Length: 292
Image (cartoon, rainbow, N blue to C red; front, top):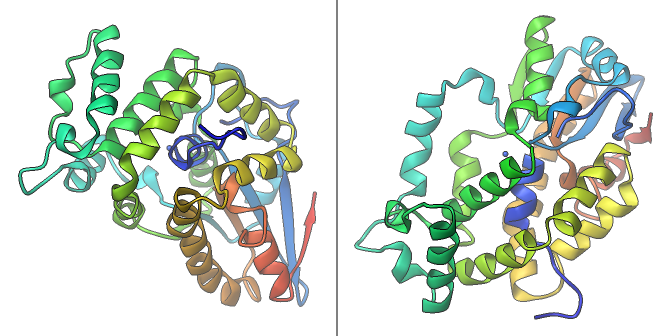
């Protein structure tokens, strides 16, 4: 195990892309400007507790002032059944593979023991890909800590936009988002080892991160980014597949629109910082990006 901990991007992904906040919190909101046209950029998190309901006024004002709200995937247009039907093909193993064949004996035993303690038979996951099982684990732990995607910021932004008749657009499809997980399939054992380590210290790897987001502490979020994407093989591949490739595609979509449309862009918070983040990429294309 490394002396410096590295937080798994799958852990980050569930948190920042599958929290919202109370009115006293100050999550970071940015204004994007070029040629007299202003838009907004908001880093989101995707689960929250009961105290985190309600969007701050500067966020609702920005949404109301925008022509369109842009999110990663517009989940509001999908029913739970549609979500399940479209997700399952990407989550299922094929060609005779099983969860047990995809993991080391040690990691499979860890998973089996983990679920047994929660009175869950691991056999129900036999045909499920390791990344999907790990997302399930994180959702269980987040729920046990009092957090749910029902109070997530994404859903609140979408709900507010619909209530105020603001058009909603998306940067990628659900299928595209699910496909990126398959890009990490060869690193399943590394992912599960780190997931167990981080779930064992929920305060360091979750509560502190949530608090940093609530207060708009971009320095701490940047630190977590660098913990996620170190110079190891795993860190570099996960950064490229899950963040860099997507950010590049998003910027190419957004830049032509930002010169003549007023948009409110809400994406996972770790898509904002560092050299591949949306803030620097937009600045490099001549946009002024300032925090409100």
